[in-house]
Image 1 (cartoon, rainbow, N blue to C red):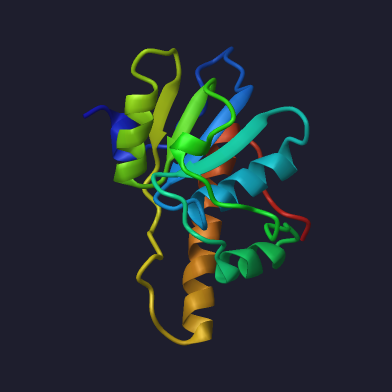
Image 2: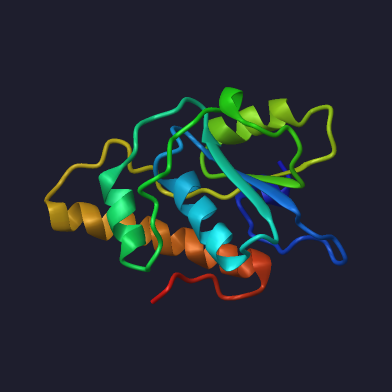
Length: 160
């Protein structure tokens, strides 16, 4: 396994431009959807951004709530799968789960597209009080935001 497979967040190669990016996770309701919203906000009209899951889930109210806390609206997000993608061309696919990373590798085996794996906690089976749930979702949101800030070399934030 290369360092990228272990989840190291490294900026794009010097001189390369990221024009199209896909974020992927298991059900496209939390991690990949959050990353999509953050990058669209940080680079409006500059980077084509999409997200998907291995299988599409349903919109996640906790994800929407913690993104709203930083001024980003995910209420219109509709989870989709790799099969539902509108585009087949990306410069990079960043996956947040091993299953999504495997699917990204299959998708890109015959095209020039970098695939990165950034492990981020999966909240699918999370239980607890509302505040415990929100705390876990905030942790995931902030983990993704920090990774994106390192990758793009600029602070990625919401409207707060």
